[in-house]
Image (cartoon, rainbow, N blue to C red; front, side):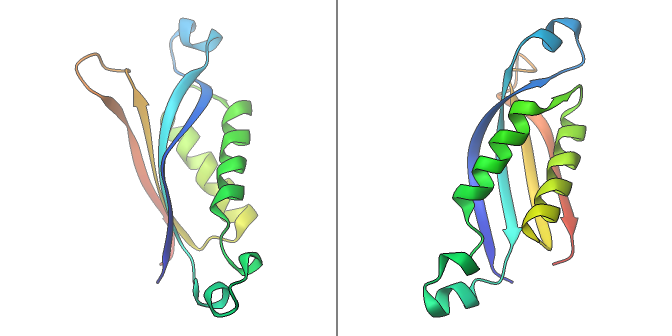
Length: 117
């Protein structure tokens, strides 16, 4: 199966369980991999048959702008559901990193896989 990916997409959102986190926006870094059959798009050089990573990126940013979750786990689950539903993606891997959440680490977060390959 072919894969389309978006690496290092930074989004600002309200995320965190502490009271002070509920009043600020924080950066999350996302790495996404999608299963997608690229052959139809490639055969006719047709963007309408491709998984348009620019459009997907814009949708992710719009989701993050409106999201208000305590857990990165919830953010990841809801985003995965949304992308699979709206874009017809059969399988995805999503890594959500919250930089600076632990002082001694570059980032912490979750990585999930959903759907069928």
